[in-house]
Amino acid sequence: MNKKINIIGMGYIGLPTALMFATSGVKVVGSDYNRALVEQLNQGKITFEESGLPELFEHARTCGIEFDTNYHTTDIYIVAVPTPYDKVSKKIDPVYVIKAVRGILDVCEVGAVIIIESTVSPSTIDRFIRPVINEKGLVIGRDIHLAHAPERIIPGNMVDELKKNARTIGVDDRTI
Image (cartoon, rainbow, N blue to C red; front, side, top):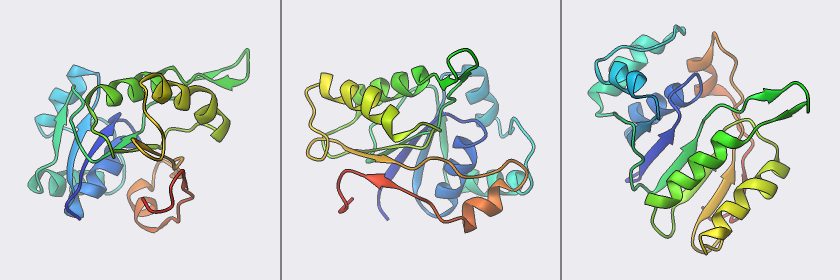
């Protein structure tokens, strides 16, 4: 695979995902708005404990993973940002996902694939993400490809689950 991936959000889902891709030979940039977090990662320090993560992190560093506060122009983007739950409305707040997609659209090229890994429903993609892409004058399936692959890993065994769990992925174009 000669693709480059920019994973947005270096938390409990995004960081292990980025490390797995990097150790599989894919060029990876992990982006996060939190400058202190990015600095820690660039200094070789992981920010949470997880079985197998320190070894995976070190391996990914030898494979050339990069960490930055900016988004990069890449072939594929994976959005793995938080989706806070509003106890009053009993719904998730997609504000971080929307912000991430807007940032991606500022740097991506035609033909890029945007994968939403954050925990959102398909209707959230339809109501909030598609309009953001359309506002830019882009046509999904022609100019930009959109996929939904909600995370399915449980803390404590993330590395093993990333390797072994089957994934459900919704896409607009089966060829991507």
